[in-house]
Structures are given as structure tokens and as C-alpha cells.
Image (cartoon, rainbow, N blue to C red):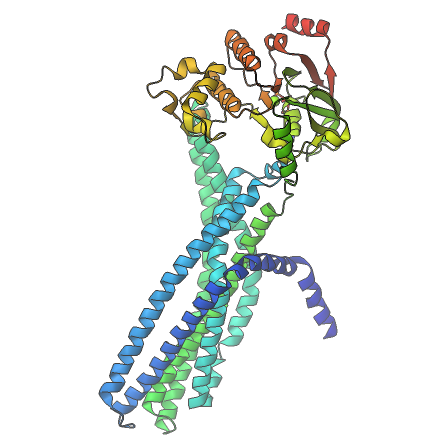
Length: 592
Ligand SMILES: Nc1ncnc2c1ncn2[C@@H]1O[C@H](COP(=O)(O)OP(=O)(O)OP(=O)(O)O)[C@@H](O)[C@H]1O
Ligand SMILES: [Mg+2]
């Protein structure tokens, strides 16, 4: 016996049950915020139960009046019964409205909370998840929790209260009936235990499948051009069919299990009802109870088995809640970015705005989470009024360097920091590069990063109070005004999703204009002029530097034409950075 107990304790402490306990604790931190709502919901449930039970008692009296065992006032009892039923109806409707209201509010709050947490999650950890998966977790799993968290505890209390109240009423009138109430219990218990394991599995599989489907759809719709170009429409339709088939088979499996469960529960319920019925007839026949009491027992036996089933059905709810919690915990428990230097970074920026800011990457090493070592020992220096170029073969780490500068990832060793002006004041005057320092940067990444909306809206995304004149000024600097001016709606022309409706080079110039509008001391351009013709590219770079703002600019490029506009050129290669001399730069330009 002791051994067995130990076994169960160890099972609780490790494995699935431990996981469920951790998940329950996590849900509780949300649940406790809404205790007021839950108390209200529970009280409404209690009131509903009270009305229901009182109605059974009144109907018993009514039958007794009719069958002559009781000579109470027929009309008033009848009115009371109708009153009770209307009362139940009203309480139920109010409770439904209130719970819908609260559940919507909680849903929005939990989603907002998770959204914020996802936003400050370490970037590289986050990229391990497909956006479709993230989206499913954020929408379906969060909804699941918000719906369950409010109803679970109140329902547990309401059902338990209803069961106990009905039971007490039965015992009060004839204790022999009470035995029947327990008849169904062992079946329910055994069933819930065996079902639990299968349900946990099924829930996890179902959630993973949902994420896969949503990822597939999202990716297909956003790559429709490629799919058409490769003539893959049939293939993608077939793939969706296959995924749907997998999904349906899995859901049907789940359905079959629920059908068997409810079949078994209903059979037990029916057996209990018939037993009650038989026993009731016998008790009336032998004169122990009245007809009224028998009708009351019959309705109460319905309440008892129904409540027992409802209590059993809380098991799958609990499982689905904890599964969802686990899936959200995977996301929100990933490492967070450190914004603790926000105030310091704000002061630093204001202090150095007029003289500009230098950036130093000092003997940096970095490997991605998958073990891919990109840098062993790389150093870069960039001062105000300079354009620094990073060149090198594709895949050697130029973009990675910019990500390290933006503190999207932390170097494994070496130092990354900023300082005001051109001379390094030493340790004390430096600001380490952390997520807090990002406010000092403008970044034009590789690829298209415009949002859907008008050109002006896209620009104001980075500077909400920008005037039309300021926007036009930046468009001019980025050589984008030439084509924007000709659009019928000018800066109010619509950009489609991911820069749609504009050529690659136009979208690049819009991205540069947006970066310039932000007037950040540091500007990072990742192949940002790669789609421009050489003349326009030169013009853009010249404009950027002629702008008298003390800007520090780092560009990555494959195009040697850019190099003549740069103060220093670093070759990024073999996990290192090498500062090139003029001869090497000339060689690069010539060999192009
Ligand atoms: N998120 C990531 N996880 C793991 N490895 C990555 C990740 N991103 C890039 N890498 C790897 O890091 C190396 C450097 O990539 P990076 O994008 O920095 O190259 P790049 O010099 O910018 O190339 P390109 O000129 O083609 O833009 C590559 O080998 C790439 O496969
Ligand atoms: Mg790159």
C-alpha cells in the first residue's frame, strides 16, 4: 500500500501530472485577476440551482394537491410554480449575458497580454516557431483559456453544489433513493481516468495539426505568385487535401471517443433513472411515499445524473485548458529581451544628438542557436558622418552583424557599445548595445518591409507627428519623390501588403525614406540599394551624407560602386572582419 502511494506521489511530482500542475498554476495567475467575475457567475449559478430545486419541490406539492394528499391552495401553488420557472429562465439568461461579456473582456485581455509578451521575446528563439503556429497559439489557445478559465471553477462549484443540494433533498424525503444517486458514480470515475491520457494526447495532436494547417494556408496565400510561376497549383491543392484528410481522421477519432463516452454515460444515466422509476413505483405502491414525492425524485434523479455527467465533462475541459496553457507557456517562457537600460539610452541619445554617435563592435564572437558559428573574432568601428561598408560573399555574416548591432541577438563574447562623438571616452562613457539602444537606429532590412496602408501612413509609423513636408523631404532624399509625385494620390497612394503595387527598387527607396524620416543617429542599410540602378544608388547615398544631420551609417553591399562613397570598408569573411586598404578596395571595384 505504502509502495503504491509512493508510486503515485512520484507520478504527480514528475511527468504529465507535474506538467499539468505547472500549467494549472500558470492559468491561476490569470484566473485570480477575475475572481470577482467568477464569484458573480457562481452566485448566479447557485441562484439558478436554487430556483430549479424549489420548482421541483413546488411541483411535488402540486401533484400532491391534485392527488388529494394535500389540500393546499391549488391556484397559488400553480402560480408559484410558473413564477419559479420564469425566475429560472431570467437567471439563466442574465448569467449567459454576463458570462459572454466577461469572457469577451478576458479574451481580449489575455490576448493583449500574450501579444505583448511575444513582442518582447528574444528574436532568435521566436524564429524557431512558424508564424502560422504562433498565430494559432495566440488566437485559439488564448481563447480556449479565456473561455475555460472563467467557467471552470464556477462550474465546478455550481455542479458540486447542485449535486449536494439535490442529494440532501432526496435524503430528506427518503434516504433509500440516495443509494441510487451513487449508482452511476463508479462508472464516471473509471471512465474519466482512462479517458484522461487519451485526451491529453489527442488535444496536443489536434493543436499541432491546427497550427500546421494554419501555417500551410498562411504560407500558400503569401507565396501565391511563386506557386503560380512554378505551376504548382494542383500540387498545393493536393497538399491541402492531404492535410485536411489527416485533420478529419484525427478529429473523427476524437469524436468516436466522445461518442462512446457519452453513450456509456447516457446508458448509466438511463439505468439510474429506470431504477429510480421502479423503486419509486414500488414505494408509492407500498404507501411509503406520495405521488408528488415520486415525481420529485424522478426529476431529482435527472438532476443528479445530469450533474454527475457535467462534473465528468469538466475533465476534458481541464485537459484542453492545460494543453493550451502549455502551448502558450512554450512561447511566453522563452527568454525575454532586456529593456532595463531604457532610461539610460534615452538620456544618452539626447545628450549626443548634436555631435552624433559612434558604434564599436569589439572582438565579437557569435553562433546561432543551431550551432552555426558565424563570427569568431570580428571588430567594426563606425563614427558620425561616416558611411561604413560591410562587403563579402553571400552567407558570410553581413546581415548577422547588423542583427548583433541591433541587439536582436547577444554576442557570445566581445563587446558591443556606443559612445558620443568620435573619441572613445572609455568604459564609463559607453552605452552597451542592448534592446534599449534600438531607439537610436533606423534599419532598412534586406527584402520588402513596407506595411499595407498609404505611403504617408507607412512613414508616420516611425514618426507619428511627421508633417507632409517632412515626409516629402525624406522621399526626396531617398530619390523616391520622383515617382511618388507622379502618383494620382501622391503620398496618400496605397501600398499593398509587403510593398505590393511598387517595384522592388521603388519599395527600397520608400524604405530608405522611412528610415531617414526617423532621424536616428545611426542608420543601417542591408543591401538597401541593391535593386536601384547605379546612378540612383549613388544619388541616394550622396543625399544621405549631404543631409547635415550627424549620422553614422553602416551599409552592407555586393556592389563595389557603393564603396567609393564609404569612409571604411570591412570584408566579412571566414568568421572575421578585415579592414580593407585603398588598394584592396580598388581591386574589388575593378574585379567586379
Ligand atoms: N536565423 C538563423 N539561424 C541559423 N543560422 C542562420 C540564421 N540566419 C542566418 N544564418 C546563417 O548565418 C550565416 C550568415 O548569414 P547572413 O544572413 O548573415 O549572411 P549575409 O552575409 O548577410 O549573406 P547575403 O549576402 O546573402 O545576404 C549563413 O551561413 C546563414 O546560413
Ligand atoms: Mg544578408
